[in-house]
Length: 102
Image (cartoon, rainbow, N blue to C red; front, side, top):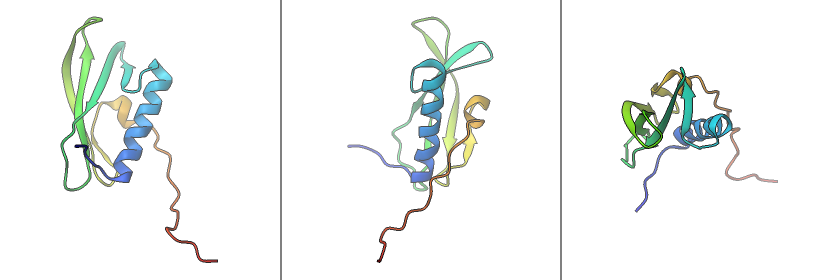
């Protein structure tokens, strides 16, 4: 069974993924301060539609250590994350009406 999150939180995580891919070629890996990090999204359901997860720091090519956590609220606000992820611009998604009457 899958999990769900809000559209706004999903848009933030997608922006992170695009930025990571542009920087490192991997969708969840980024470099900051001369170190390589990656994040993993938790599969926990949150009532507000938030996305949470863990950030890891690579200590060798085959080993990583947890270095923190992140939380994107259901409203799309980054409440907790490394500075690199917090500073990524998230494009605004235009509101599209569900129905258009002609």
